[in-house]
Image 1 (cartoon, rainbow, N blue to C red):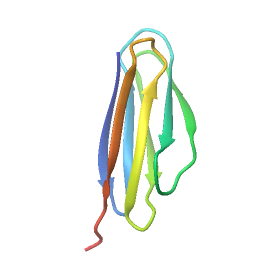
Image 2: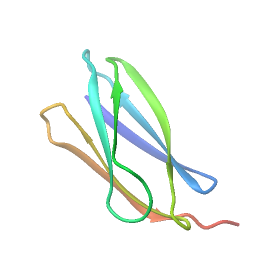
Image 3: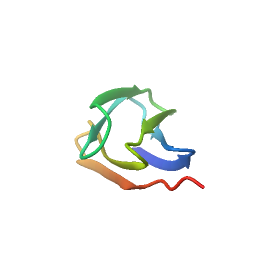
Length: 83
């Protein structure tokens, strides 16, 4: 079972990709607007991985999918305000 959590860290977004299943899962991060390049991250069974997603002048919009056959999709979008 895949899951994703997001937290703001300065001017970037930290994404934690979790795989509570028993087999490795490929998470694909796809930018919708603003900065970023598509990338795929493999997470082993029972493991998690943290990564940072850059913002473009404080804005971000990324969709995370997981190749599990369950149609797992989560989208994160917003603006980080410095202050």
